[in-house]
Length: 148
Ligand SMILES: [Mg+2]
Image 1 (cartoon, rainbow, N blue to C red):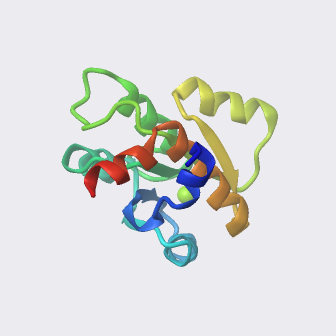
Image 2 (cartoon, helix red, strand yellow):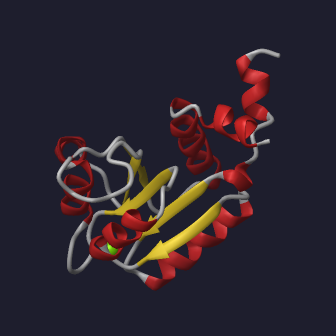
């Protein structure tokens, strides 16, 4: 079996996503899409809650809104990447979620340590593609087979 076939057989139900988003409507919409795609989703309302969740749980990927109260998406990302912060996984892929992306803005995301971004409202197909891209980079399909 080559890697590509192996990957297609990976099960999205084994993928844990942390969704950090302060807008209740956007939360519901993103949750619905992610659950329909078959992923496990936990939801937090801001960057501070995201950091707290990341101390307890090892997520496969984070979808991070940029503008949030308390700790915003950029600040939360810097803290996750800081080796001194006590999150489980400093390398977890972080995807920015944003309404409008301009070039300078996306540079800010990368400077903060984010891996990529998706624009709101989501195209479910694009969102799934980006999630799978980063999960594949982490070798998640191997993890799934090891658990069996
Ligand atoms: Mg927001």
